[in-house]
Amino acid sequence: MKVFLENYNDWVDLAKSFVGDTYAQDIIQEAYIKLSGYDNEYINRSYIYLTIRSLCFDFLKAKKRVLKVEIKDYNIEDIEENEYKEVYNNLLIEIEKEIETWSWYDREIFKLYRDTPMSLRKLANETGISVTSIYLTIKKCKELLKDKFKQDYEML
Image (cartoon, rainbow, N blue to C red; front, side, top):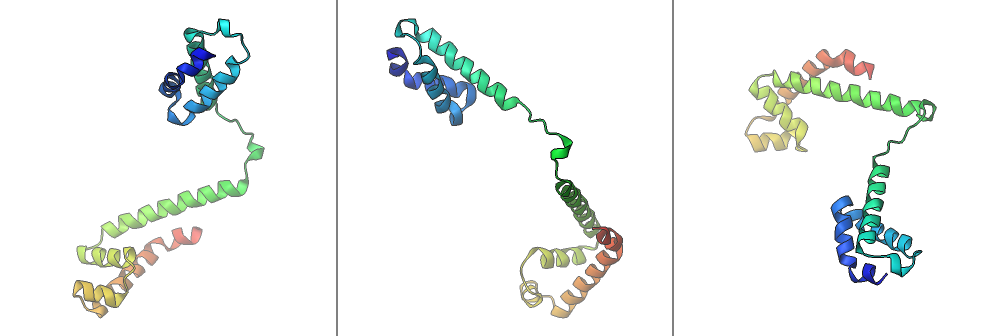
């Protein structure tokens, strides 16, 4: 075990080269436990190297294994929630595509309103556009979206 302890940092570096920083110390500790059961006369650098390498490969194989789950273990509510999220995300993408077809003025005013926490008055002060103009533009844009995506939204 003297060879193992004298070259401890080298063994850690070896393990890091196989499994990375996170698990290297654990593998070295496991190797120490495994080697402590043998007589010291049989332990040399090459035996330690092969032991550490073998433990690293075993670790990597175990990490690659895929957990198989039976269909009865799935929660139907989780599946429905995932489908809901997918449909909702697709609806958001379609809405964004629709917004991109609007005139520059309508699109930019609506995005400012939607993406910033500013009130209509604050938007008017920041942009120099009247509150009435901003209000009417946002109202028109909301109505366009409601008319176009009403059925899609009701399905959710």
